[in-house]
Image (cartoon, rainbow, N blue to C red; front, side, top):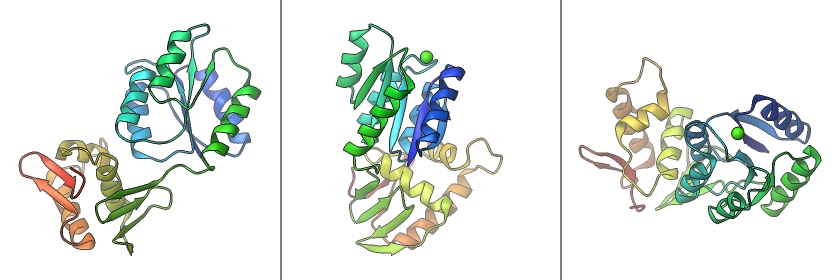
Length: 220
Ligand code: CA
């Protein structure tokens, strides 16, 4: 099971990571809102622990963006003590559970287990767009039910388009996602990957809006 811990207090983050790891989770950690939004929007997690008080983009905005983009990972929010407003806003924004700070680690683990039980212990990882299906846990792609072999880079491209199916994704954003800050990033490289993916998936899956970017056919 994969868990994402979003917490900017290093001491609490460390405690959370250790406790969840000892409960069988594979842990990833981020300490800042924008990074959390990006990570949660591009990977499937069985559990996300999200502190609402974050530097940069705050936790509530991160949660709203995730839910707006169709991210279904179960989210447990950490709220300020006594702030009923935060709890209400968090639940309205799509949190599955909450825990006010300071909390007992035993209680957090109990709530984490309950959340995972409720969601079947598996992140909702299957994305269906038109005739394409993308399984974010198994890193598998199929067209009309027929599996298609793709490289990790190609998978990152396809899954990103699937997770952002409701809009045209600009080339610069795809480059950021595929290559990060590496020097190798350029639009020719991106076009080459797109061409390879199109050959593998066949016609009518990856669409282009000239001058704007790429999208999955049947999604928008
Ligand atoms: Ca905080």
